[in-house]
Length: 155
Image (cartoon, rainbow, N blue to C red):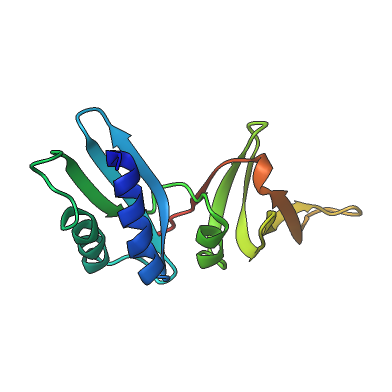
């Protein structure tokens, strides 16, 4: 069996047994360096990464094909890419870069298979008189319009 296909098969078997985890990215680099990025409904522990690594390494023959394997969790600096990732971040502030280069920042309120819904909060001038009023509105954004989405880190 081809090397890459074997790695993918072993990883898929592991993820089928661990339904709380899901694949974000699988990259093959020159020199047979492999990087696996996982996420989970309840986060990813070091033990989860070790288990995934072992599920692959213990079923491959290094005498037949030498490789380097790195398994990691999707960190806060990694963009959100799957509906499942968006869903686990409901209630958090996210910054979305749209395909037209516009930025939208708001609280992630809803997620489905086609789009996300953000709650936007801002102040705008009153229509009559001086001062500003607080505004809260929902904005739906289809995944097809999202170039990059990151969880906003606030201290």
